[in-house]
Amino acid sequence: MNNSLKASELILNPDGSIYHLNLLPEDIAPTIFLVGDQNRVPEVSKHFDFIELKKSNREFIAHTGYIGNKRLTVLSTGIGSDNIDIVLNELDALVNIDFGLREIKAEKQSLQLIRIGTSGSLQNDIEINSILVSEYGLGLDHLLHFYALERDIVIAKKIKEHLDLPFIDPYFVKASDPLLNLFSNHFRTGITASCPGFYAPQGRMLRGQTVSTQLISKLNTLFIHQQIITNFEMETASIYGMAKVLGHQAISVNCILANRISNQFSTNPQAVIHKAIQEVIDVYLNQK
Image (cartoon, rainbow, N blue to C red; front, top):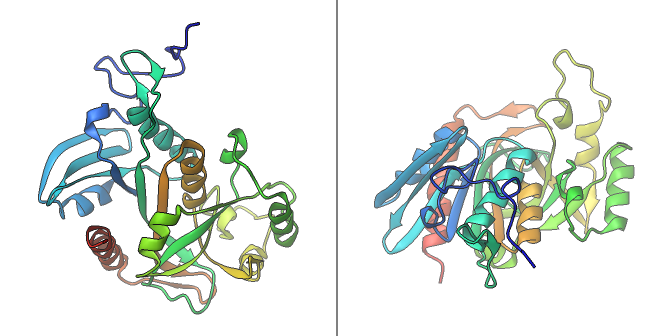
């Protein structure tokens, strides 16, 4: 029986690198910092003692290097769950598929994926310029419905009814316990809703009329496991879901730049992002 992956399924570039990320298996470290904005990659890698590799293709930029004896990669994902689908599948392929044989390896490697991203608060007491770790990701997109992810139907039904959005089918995924235990000792934790867009899907209306004018207030009053929904953005739930499907560890650290209840926005977002990057690296390096 031929178990090799077809050329149309596992797509490689002429140099043997994976199609979108333009990376070879040896290019990535076991721990990968994920950032949405490609301009944020050098803001992370400037903390490396030295950088051994820089590669880019489209919105995907990767720097790999060392801090002390720890090899680390920082990679930009772009925006949204569709990009997360590409990034996590291709990162997984880099460590768990033999490109020469085009076969899945017998022994699997689990990556550590640490997202450092921006987000909006859904609660008055979660202030702008603060940092929050996502204990759970609540997916309002549809990516994970294309994968064999076990879902809690009762929770999904409750969310759908509370938000009064009959066209969504939510999914709910927890962060990886080892990374959550590490970062929850240093930052507030919460439930992060991940939306399939920035404007109407996050309750913003410029000229296009939204079908849910009460989305913010409904998210603000939604409780799951006796916990409030703390914030929202566009990637966390899909990262958690794909990591669970593929057997990787994932955590999401959110810089709160906006408060959608008080309608405030940070006057110095770059300072918040730089602070989060430094603190995340410090926590990771100082783990026992």
